[in-house]
Length: 467
Image (tube, rainbow, N blue to C red; front, side):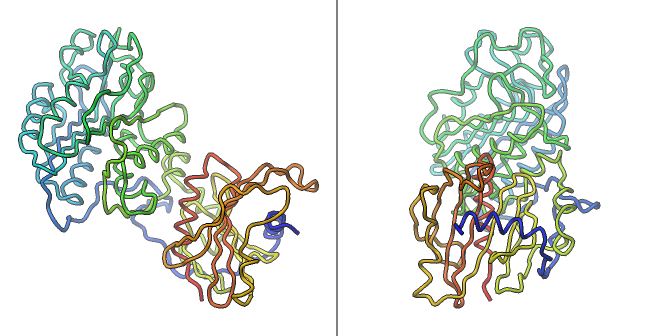
């Protein structure tokens, strides 16, 4: 039987066998509600940084506009950003303007103050959470001050164009300029209603152009899109998710989050938002390291986005003997930490462990073969046959403290007896530990969840222990 057929058969047998796993500990409760369902974590919680920096930031959050619709949760997000920048990052100075403190004159004044305090080699950050609109001629987007009235003329007079803001920021001595804009330039509020007649762009507004080296602008949505709220929470989604990305949720495993990693991860999460299209954008230096030393794992944001802000389904549908714990002993020589959103099921046909993603349907299978090390290579090699296309040749990989060989292959033509089986990708990691050849396989049934589930697969491999 071919390896992929073995996995398919194992999945069928698994439904009939009884689980033999032992839960070793209960999960941390930091992100759980009183009902036991995972909910949106506190992104502002942070321990004080070991050392201070010369970095400076301006945070503007306008929740209570004088004449325009409110931006609910903007101040909560601003407080979380301030806590993160002050405590976790050790910024020298963080200026925070909220509501009545944020007419356009004050925004400009504190921006100029922050620019005057910049230092060589340091960073200057500007975070805006509020309303935006296109300029009347459609050539640029503008950030709207708190006292703008509900007319196109007032909005134009009481706003600062995006390019003007970036030019002001780039006058400083800093080597890195980071601009976060949790707003949209479609001229609509989070519910899709026009801020004022005529605020829709006359021509599509593109992302900021011609930024200087060392500058990156991260924007919440496309020009014809709305910057919306988190599902199940009254918080602007983009600035919340981006802050989570910087805490480590977007890290690809190297302990540092770049602008490209942060915006890519945030886009992926917002695709799960029901009832709206919101596509964050980035302009400038995508390779800038926004958050060195970011180590916090993703708490299961995709499930929260899909579940309307709670993830009760994952805990409720997991087998009763694993729903209450995270570290599990298979009683067959492998101890592992269950990834968020992955349920543990029984296994058979040589598979000692099977995991299934509660949302994507992707699966992880673990096999063990008692072999001498000299004979392990055959057990850990690629599958063979005309149906299999090698996507990536085997490469030496280290996950955590475990060394092995990783490969990727695609099932192109199903075996006749599996004609209904869709084309699938598999990522395989093989290692020899404690007298056994171990094979870990990620079976990708949903290509849209490939990247997120591959990250979960890597984290799973980094945390397994062999006994």
